[in-house]
Length: 116
Image 1 (cartoon, one colour):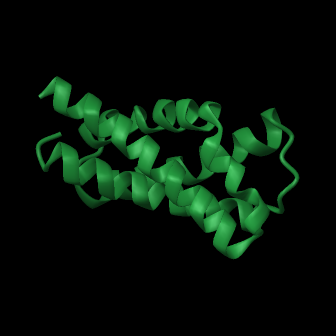
Image 2: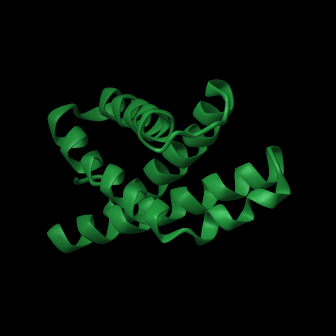
C-alpha cells in the first residue's frame, strides 16, 4: 500500500505538471513549452503532491478532496510569485495551477484507489 501511494504521488505530480505546461502553451503562449522540460518543476510538483495522502487521511471524503485541490492550487501559485518571482498575473497563475491540481488529484485517486 505504501509503494502504491508513493507511485501515485509521483505520477500525480508529473501528470499535473505536464497538464499545467500544456494549458500554458494552449491558453497563454506557445513559447512556454520549455516549462514542460524543466526538471525542477517536476520535483516541486511531486513534493507538493506528497501532501495529498496526509490530507486524505486527516480529512476524509469530499472535504479532503476540496482541501487538497485548494492546497495544490494556492501553494504553487504562492511559490511562483513569492519565491521564484513569477511575472504572470494572479488569475492566470491560479487558473494554470488549478489545472495542475485537478489533474494531479484525478491521477492520484486513479492510481492510489479509494483506500488511501
